[in-house]
Image 1 (cartoon, rainbow, N blue to C red):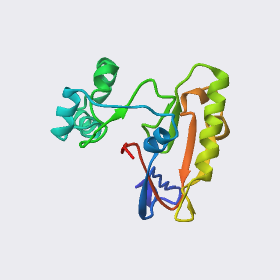
Image 2: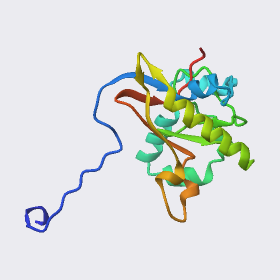
Image 3: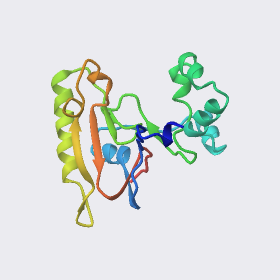
Image 4: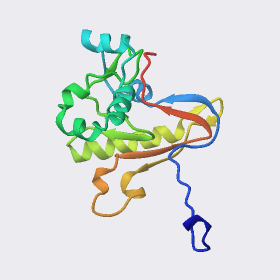
Amino acid sequence: DLANSQNANMFLVSDHGFGSIDEYFLINTWLHNNGLTKLGSPNEFRKLLAFSKLNRKIVRNILSKLKLKNIASKFIPITLKETIPLESNESNFIEKTSKAFSEAYNEITINTNVSSEYESIRNKIISELLKLERNGKKVVLKAEKRENIFSGDYVERAYDIQLLLNDGFGWSPFTRKT
């Protein structure tokens, strides 16, 4: 009935773009090539999980269907969560000692407690991302510090760098040795 009334409003919200992807930008591989992300080799258990095609997305989907995702996120130790591969054919993973890494869409986390180093790393990453080109086309349209995008009491909860890729580029957290 509400939809048929004259007072109804409709909002359409999406967290996905609507365009073709010509090339994936492997952000962690790029960070690794720039000396900011350390890649480790998986142990035998993680290799077995990857071989069995079990990855974090599948585990999240299973837990969601069983309505256990919130409970699992509170009670499963972080070390066990991190054992689950990001992708099924994973050949390496991000070391916790990395200065920077990306595990969520269009974001980068800086991993340091030294404030001068933090700003230096952030500024370097943003500067280099904005210069990055493939076949004469900029890969990154925008790269911003979190405080330039968000405001309020919880800005520090946002990822350190927010980025927007140019048309034709898709983001990927996966790694490839180059």
